[in-house]
Image (tube, rainbow, N blue to C red; front, side, top):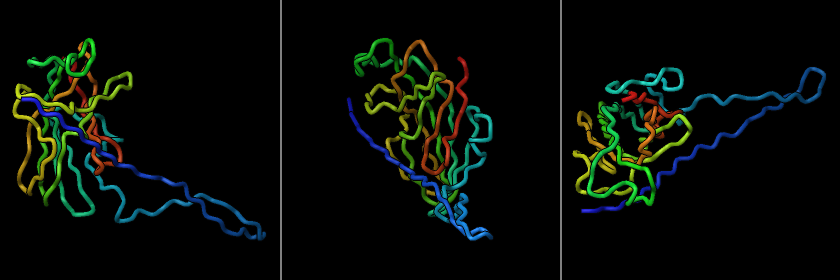
Length: 194
């Protein structure tokens, strides 16, 4: 069985510089940068802060909070396996040379409210700056259980599974990035060397 899916996730944030003008005591206008105060629509916080903390290790959970609905979730990278064998090679499917399939095992749980999850925010990051997104193709012999393309998870429930990537056989990613719009910066998990 072969299923081909295409997903486009577009999240854009526009940051505009702000300046404020005022008059100085001598009557001349003075320009100074203004900093916008945090609002309720500011990006939700995550704990621990991925921009200040070292990358998480496999098995460590990250908590995210959605300000718009108050939901809270945990996300965990459980494992990574490179060189997954399937009937269809990564090279043949993607028109590449020197690529293999890799599987990333993930778990996301709702601890408060109902959340929506997808495999597409999970990105493999390489030391040379290359980033690889999950495969848009799935085959019946991909590692099971598969992480869903999209899922709704009620409070107290979890979703766990594997998502597959076509990766260069001679390289390993150094980090797993979680690029959810709930975080100001992607969360990172360090990939073990072997």
